[in-house]
Image (cartoon, rainbow, N blue to C red; front, side, top):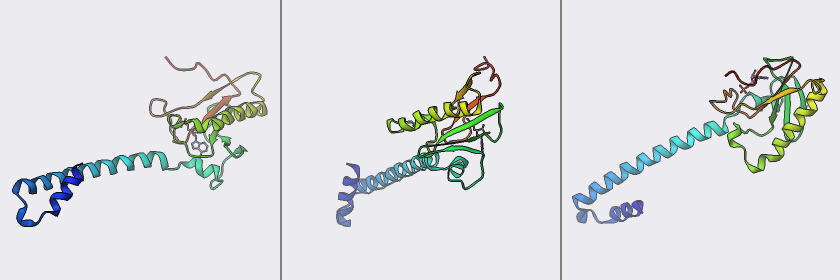
Length: 165
Ligand code: AMP
């Protein structure tokens, strides 16, 4: 335990401190400071990613306007502000889960509800017979722009090939 070693040395009377011990304290102190700064930076980075709310939280709490179609205890659905097809709805968890990478076992009821609400809204929009696409973009390679998990419900016209090859 390096910190214990440092503490013991610090407790020695000044007269009994040898040069090597002083050096040991200084390097140990510098090392601990570096570790401390690195840990702080790591936790700040994680907190920023995990805790920072997006515009979707404000929509869910009705603090800003949206074309909301559905809300229950677990999920909220509203029309995309920049629709890519005649029907373009976003279904989002009420709790802030930044990306699909953060899904855990406890989120299973939310994920089930998102899918169920998507199929109900598709019926409501009259697009079920012709079909539609559900998309969840995740992270950088998934080109996710809003860091609050959301499922796109797209339909009302052919949505095209799945991916450009
Ligand atoms: P993604 O690229 O999967 O993160 O998609 C984000 C989607 O959120 C885009 O389709 C945006 O048009 C949509 N969006 C961003 N801000 C709003 C907003 N205030 N209301 C509704 N949709 C939004």
